[in-house]
Length: 228
Ligand code: DC
Image (cartoon, rainbow, N blue to C red; front, top):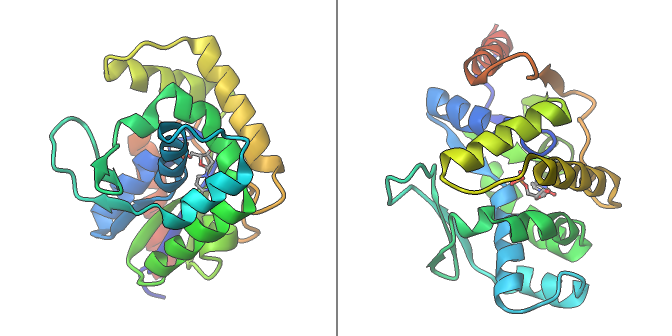
């Protein structure tokens, strides 16, 4: 077999998908595409425009008109890419607690998913891509040749998210982070459209006892195995 052309990484919030996705894409010289950024950008734009998260029609309409761009990083401040919404740099704004609090509600709207899934699929089908999210192996790129589902316990994920925020110089409460992760997992995995779940042909990696390097090594092994 050949090197997998499309690699998908799905899993719950803060399970290490983004870190693995970026590292794996760098190793393969593939495009790294974190689809969560798009749901976050719509959520941020709705908050910015004063649209209520509960206003499904208005949020869905916004997702069809907003111009979201993900480009190589222009600043050396720890970002892996620039995120632009209608030309405005929102790279760090989309990581704010208000966005964390609303994004799962926004991501459950069928109209929002339809608009964003179409864009993600178009980019993914070009190949040479590591695409990260919740429904990539099941809905966005079901034909992908290597699918990874990354798991970790809530306690470990909360610990990682806490350290991430601290390292950026932010304020965080471990309890609030844990609550938010659990609530997002609940909404993401019980929604009607494209719920969070492993594709039947996904390989499940549990990263609880592994640091980022070991997770990358495990994923590299899967890529090499695919080539044999
Ligand atoms: O990976 P993340 O935490 O940045 O994702 C933010 C939210 O977006 C998450 O709560 C679920 C949603 N999401 C989704 O529903 N489908 C995707 N493919 C990616 C993210």
